[in-house]
Length: 371
Image (tube, rainbow, N blue to C red):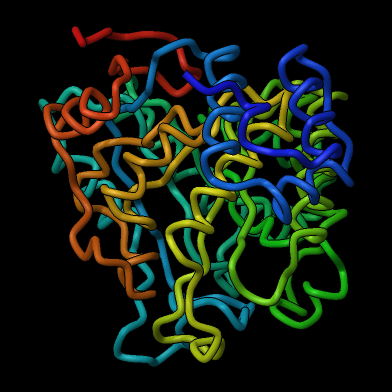
């Protein structure tokens, strides 16, 4: 069997290989070198080393569903296929009762998490969104509530007149357990001005997540890739996440989000190849040495690429979803009605050579399935 050193004569890559083998952190310029110089075979081997160091031969999933309260949004990001304006026939803004009916649809089902995120509504405030959490908690006290991206939180907390810490603690009292990683996009300010100029700044996104972590609210982190950014922008983005994780330890997982080109003003850019997607998973896993999990969100990239990502550093496939999200189907994802049974997820994981583990939202094991 070949060792990683057999795949390159490049002295920079050989130095990186030695660092990865010994568990040492790679620098930003070394992360860029991996993107630019390393082939997929080498990246698979290196990311597999790091993946197994964190999670052995386990690959995770949970039983979850989504609620997307509205696709009305005060922002109009250039990459977004989800945003609609008020009065648009494809827009929606669900009431509390409508969203509680979505929860009731899963009565009797052994689900463990509800994921709530959507557009930044122009008028709904922290009380509206907090009372929704409270009602869900009363209806399904067993569910972990992961809700509201930093961009949504920024708007609702500002409207409330509270500080970030006060707003997050108020939502925690209402029933918030953790927050998702959406809205990060790419942190580079120049790129951000071109693709989402009205949106919450990178500094503010990081501040909200840091405050959440210090308030006992863990979160995930994301990165939107495959549009006008380059490798240095991706590494800068991950470096800022890594630095925050060093301070707080509050990120559970990192989720690379692929730019999908349908139905938005950036359609002309097209999309990255599968090889680029796998490269990105691998470099993410190697560079983000202090974030325990890398998630391949299968409704975005499809089941086949998600399965292959397990051999390029990813260790989590998200969950069953239960056909409850439209964000990526509106952007042209092949998964138009995303839902997978536990049996289907387990087969994907087993066929890639890993042990399926059903987890809760904090990555505690619920059930380990036989290989």
